[in-house]
Amino acid sequence: MSRIIVDKQIVDCDAPILRANEDGSFPIVPELSEQGLVFVSLPQYLAQKAELTARGDVGVWFAASDEPELLGADAAQLAFIAVEFPAFTDGRGFSIGRLLRERYGFTGQLRAFGDVFKDTLNYLARCGFNAFAVRADKDIEDAVKGIDDFTEFYQSSVGQPQPLFRRR
Image (tube, rainbow, N blue to C red; front, side, top):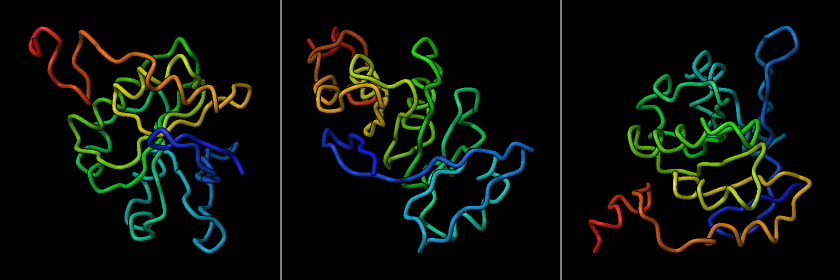
């Protein structure tokens, strides 16, 4: 059982991230009774949308190179979306999160996974992320404190649409 941070609380979670098979084919999604929540890739979701939507226990995960507009308005119908951060230097996931929240109306759990650690949590939260799968080599108890590292910001964000100069 792995642990993640959801809404500033550490919780147990075993939701797998299903990746394409070596031959490029989509993996078989386990039955509901075998597994709770399962994340499928955006391409798999788009290809099997009717079947996966009917299940209700499936979330969609975005690779850093995926475009949120491919999911579009369907984002508002989902309860779980995860975004992969393959490397600290790859910031595309921040934009994906913000677009999902602000442009496509996603209101469910938005999870960051991959190269996620304390120093990035505050910025991720400002982009609309509310769940974090912290890197295995980092202390999750320490990482959760990073969400509230800063209390005031000059720029607007998902949680604070007014920049500081407009709030004065």
